[in-house]
Length: 595
Image (spheres, rainbow, N blue to C red):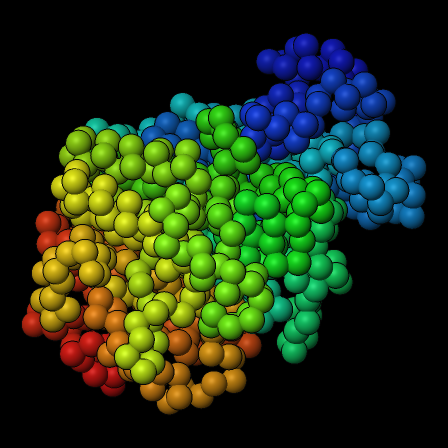
């Protein structure tokens, strides 16, 4: 029998019945952009009071959790009507209706009612929080709850169900972070990812920590999706829509397609994620006013659509967004570590390279004239001030480590051809020299130790000492003079910068050249796709880089390519007597060998 409620009365009595209020997907990603919120008065006015029955709706994309605090976490699912239900709901051509889109779909007049519960045990007997909310076509039927009243650094299990029914979602597992002043009694383990291009391969890297149950949390440094018109040589790996993404419907559809990958779903269901976007969540090589193929009003509308969809589909919080479309935020994991997640792509980035390869073509010559400007910034001055304050606060409070999640390679990288040490990629920090100098200056003046940059974007692996070249003396053999370490991971699937067809021996030869020409670069690999894990303790960090043998085939094989140690207080990669034990199974290792 159809479940009917007066939705106006429901909102007024939310403690008794379900409401829209608790579904955070209706909020705006930015408090300075209230137009990106879905007005609940508008939604309520349009509703007829009809609610989908359990038979008419399904949990379509699994479950997820993210942005864990010591006492709360964001829980996510999607509860959407079947195609038959939508087709009968007075929607043109059976298209799932999308709020705010311009493609002719009308919003549904029905709502779906969903409940959640979170408990300390897998049977969900010891429930610590629960609640109800509605979801509608206005938010693409996504659901986001903040589960609260939780204990720090504790594992929880959660599940959703259709209201007043036994139709349930898959079971999820999540974990809160330690309290800010809490002494952590064991190492915290993290998996770090970036650049997962669906058409280029299977997301094997996401599933391997699930299989090993080896980490506490997942960090994603961006390029969670790609906006390109898909073209894949692998059967059934072309995500919808069959075009480049521009509209809200496009981005929602693309995110939904990616979230059908079983290995990605498994990672979301098992671990709490802390993600941030790169450029492809919006458009290639995004900067403040445009991207490679869009600018002006087209880019602004495109970015708002992309951010709206990302906020709906990802288990992230609405942080204190007193700035424009902000995603940068921080987390304190006990006295062990502080994690600062930056946005070096979308927030307020000055002009970057648009088109061209290795400094040739596109607008590369225009950018080359700008790289030395003192007022040039990769993150915007508001974010810069916030970043430096977080580093200082973390150091002053005595946290053992400072991790900085950022999108692009921080260290200088040169090909060193004909004696020229000019960087070859101005789209990363090498294109924003004064900004990078200001970071080093802040670390130096504040005597801030134990800083680890976590970087993505490049589709290759780079492990370096943080060396302020030409400004502070640095010894590449001992690491003396470094300010910390950069751990930059390769892509989940996205092709190597030297091309997917490049044989391993040729990729390794280029890696050897790069390691030779860049004094701070201690290990580099161009061949493998994969990820890395970190085990973080008070005395040291152990980092392990894993390569996936073949992303064109779904499987759980992986190779431990290299591992590194960072000792507390040393501000460099440990030498014992050489970095990484003197051997690796891929790429090139300074003062070591590949076996």
